[in-house]
Image 1: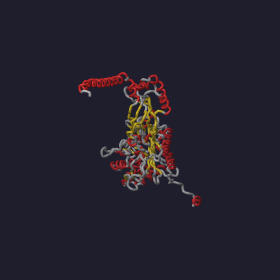
Image 2: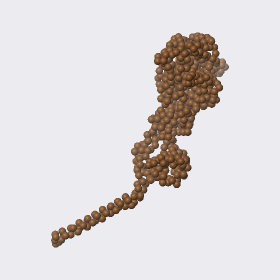
Image 3: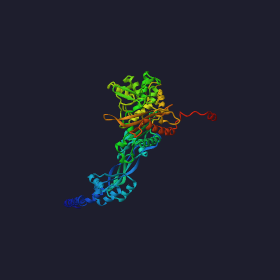
Image 4: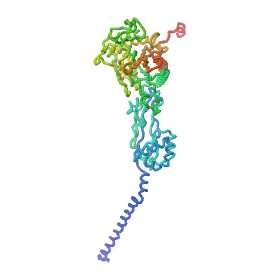
Length: 570
């Protein structure tokens, strides 16, 4: 039997052994900690950099914009963009020249981007590069240089629909046109995912999706791309033929108020970012104001008929071809003598229109123009749409000369879109409809601005303008009745009106028996010939010849069948 005393003697020794073991273990851990944190820090840093978690964006494509028939006007295509980590690329200076060459940038640009990058980990070098450029850069396998998937906006119709559709910036945000107006609708919401990246920023493994990307919604426009091409071609031809400064053309659907075509010259190609200059991408048909000249006379006559003082055959004495109002003289191009109200429109008599206007109450004249939407925004929602200008005699009492000149389109300002809308109201029996750049399944009820019978009466007078001897006979469209009005306007300048700078205008409706289309053609500063009937009316004719065929609109002015043809057809 072992005595208790002996056992007690061994206890301190055992305790010392255990304490020694613990001391050795602690010393070992301390040494390992020193080794990892001090001696092997470069190794650990490398391992940390070699594998790390990152949250990256997943791009979402922008909604497609199409014409009314589904033809694409703006689409987003996947592209690659080159980016780099300045810290890592800075250590590979010997490869900078090869990278600059492969990426299609100058050495100066590359060096500037690296210097600007500072402590950041992500800097773009070149965005939206061609596939072969992306492949060359990737093949170099330079530390810190990588590719990122993005979407680039592409416009298949190019300059033809540029002013309506607009364009986006490098970050795919709408900047002009309907791209800007409906940016929130078209813009997608990027997704997010957690990934593991290596030291070169390359994704090694997808860990988890945090948010699924949501693409933008598509947009269906009211534009008919066939009419848009036709209008673009004819307007460009006319602007070039007359060496004009600019031009605009608008076509509206009379029944729905939809914009079927809208073009301007000069135009630009939204796929070429070097052409994105304000004087090129401005949509003149919506943003630029002009005095409409004689194209306003039908509304003056409509107001006169509405007053009950005048009828289409009421005589007006325009002799001797001029008319003095105070110290001013209003002139016709010739002495038409005693004519009726219809002939005032047909011959575009300034004297006749002025005499009629001066016999009306100024407030009634203003109200008639205002109800037709003249001098006011169409509320189409197009960015930058001009309000227009129509003086109100209640606040700015008219002088006689101002009331007289207002009758033939001076003293008020409209846009081509506003004028087209007013003519569409004439074609719709006096119903002013809201303008839309978006496709409409069915017509929206408008506001009645003319009494029953007034609009048809004015429309009948406008047909005389296109007949032989009328100022708009060059707007003739074979087999169709056309109603329209010409305008030749002196351009306003500081201190008065220019002597040799004009606007040539034509506004018309077709087919006149039941109008389907309303259009306005404006040619800015044509050289040589400058009358609206000589310059703008033929553009209307050429566009509508094609439009009637494309839209399959039945003729309303076929010549009568001869007896033999009737017998054969019967």
